Length: 261
Image 1 (tube, rainbow, N blue to C red):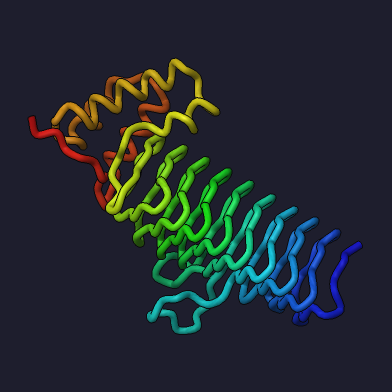
Image 2: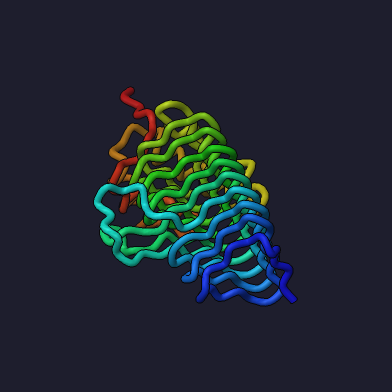
């Protein structure tokens, strides 16, 4: 059974799964799809072609799927796709994709989006990420799995953030942050590995391998991408390979303080 307030506005054509709760003064688009067990609190709005998976908690005044904040948008068909078991807190704003970015904004599973978080058009979020209050992602940003963005932190368009990376609060990020690393500051630069996050998920031996790789990459003073290519060819650690591959493939560069000694 669904628990849908008679004060909610649900357009004809919306697909509502079983055991869904929709509070008063919500708006649900006729093209929306809401998965089983999802809860949508009072005054939340689901616009456009938005697909929401199962057992999500969407809090009051969240706005999901309203048109992209992109002047090139001309009414073309675009999507917002949200996975399962996400917590989407008050006054969040998620925009769908644009034609220039593939037409889709995609959110994975088991993420926490705190109040006032913004996901711009064509953003891709992995699984188990945390975005703290007022974290702001511009268009085309990509985040891996288990990444964390601190509160009041803006992320420049097209930036990539790797798995298990952390961006500290009140930073401003304009370049790519490799997996397993911690970045902080305005403008944000690498400060080391995200050791607190890594210790929760990765074996000590792999953390030691990442420590050695970090020193070789960022503290040797050698050209970064050359060093990453060399490490990639010789390491047996999958974690180090992921780190080096990310660095080799970066388009925006890595924000680190170069050692010129």
